Amino acid sequence: MRIHHLRNATFVIESGKQFILIDPMLCDKGKLPPFSVIRHRARLNPLVPLPDSASEILEKVTHCLITHSQTFGIKAFQHTDHLDKAGESFLRKNNIPVVCREQDAAYLKNYGITIETTLNFWQPKEFLGGEITAVPAQHGHGWIHYLMANGAGFFLKLPGEPSVYISGDTVFTKDVKRALTEFKPDIAVVAAGSASLDVGREILMALEEIVTFIRLSPNKVIANHLEALNHCPTTRAQLKQVLEHNDLLSKTFIPADGETLTVSA
Image 1 (spheres, rainbow, N blue to C red):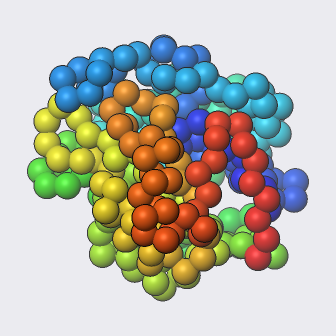
Image 2: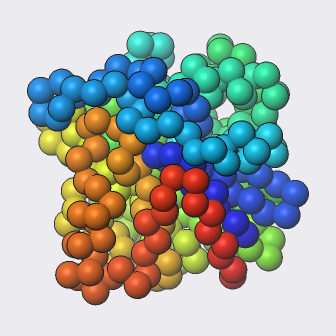
């Protein structure tokens, strides 16, 4: 298996002839508004362009997983850092089959996206000869998560490949702990940007929660959702320093945009 990190939470899992795209934010640099204007410096998103390798990798995409997309079915509330207009266009143009939560299916179909598989939490379904299971993802601490697009993480087990748990946009919860301890993934992908909005508490794991996530992970961890959005203050350097202090850096990959990781079962 190869994992091609593109930018933020957007990456591609390569398994044989299958190229599985996760959460496509594919627009050019600076095409989205700031996600915070008070708590964090107001800058247009994404902060960085797609890497030069993106086009070649995207040409090979065969499937797509979308962890979350909408709140209350309102287009203006779509989480464009996981599915933007360019991502929608890419999925439509190439008729890419999509896996998502049952609750997101009608919304995505309304924008011409081909839904192949819908998931309910903790109920595995067949996927590419293996299985995929949705894990609850709570997008924020306290009241703020009720206004967010609470979505799913995914546990993916393909034949002959290392198993992968993608946390999605979540804080640390008993469901996240359950996924790590029961599934025992070979690779766990954590959204590590510690995002927050102008109101409320963090909408992703704070640094101490990321440390807990990595410590509980039975094997390797990939940290993404870093240095691409104006409301995600945690940098790669800061995360590395914290992990070094907690003796966890050796089990954690912090990929650069455009970097490809090769992993084995």
